[in-house]
Length: 433
Image (cartoon, rainbow, N blue to C red):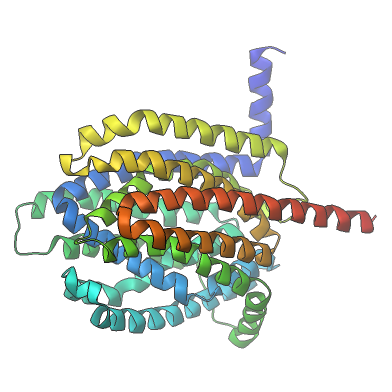
């Protein structure tokens, strides 16, 4: 077969494959957003400095931790409801239920976070109590992203997912230049307040536009609530308890670093190393997202999909190791040099997590919440145990090592539950013959 024939065959398969088109679109947008995100981060770190950048990320991690604790699997249940809804009218009604859930989570988060800001000594010791109290009332904007990440893939609205996921990054990229130009010599305004104000404003405008496009309805609220509660009981709550032991403990690591450090500098270093490693998750996430609705009908993940995902991810890891040193040395101030070594460690964990998340998306589409919960418990206990041992002494390095070991445990457990699910699907298929 000639090269021309191979290309022609590939072109025809791509033209007829909706998932391939969507995966390519997401991948293109990832590659567009990636350099913009890095440039934004470089500009912001130069404006804020290591300590204020650490304070900025610490507040972000606190908001994230609060959501993980207080969401109770509600958005996961909306994901399931939208995925199984047989009409667009029902989906719009579930979008409305999602907004009600967002409001409930927001109220709980504000009450909890305000109390934490006054009660927890770490806020006052780091001098960020007043700053946190200014940002907390607007945390609902930050939580919109979690809602969209659940409902848009479930309805295969990749067009709106692109807007919700990537447009805020582009807008904040523009704003970062404005921030640096207008406020770099301003000593009266707190840099954390300035950056958070622009960050939340750009998100709000775009998230409201996406909501306008979704056109949520509040018809049959009681009926949809009962169905959503049923999905939460069957699926969402199981994933929630899993997240409580894995995602929550992972989100807890920066908070522990802060607690055992004199300032939040190491929080910034560890978080930046994770950000530099984040491109490794793009290919697995893109492929899993574009295939999410289709995964629900698969008895097994196609081997070709596995091989392509793994090969590209490993190639990405090698590329990252080659460029991270020169990249940090050229674009960041000398204060950030410790990030290079941390990235070599965290990138391995990120690769393991991204492959595991790819498989877990398949289990999620199958409604296998219990397996996700159980694997998350195992990963969570591993993360907590190692964090309490390593972080007090080794700070960011201890968190990075914990990230890698937890990734090894995660991929091992999720593969075990994947094969268990495949066996279940094959058994059911043979019974139905």
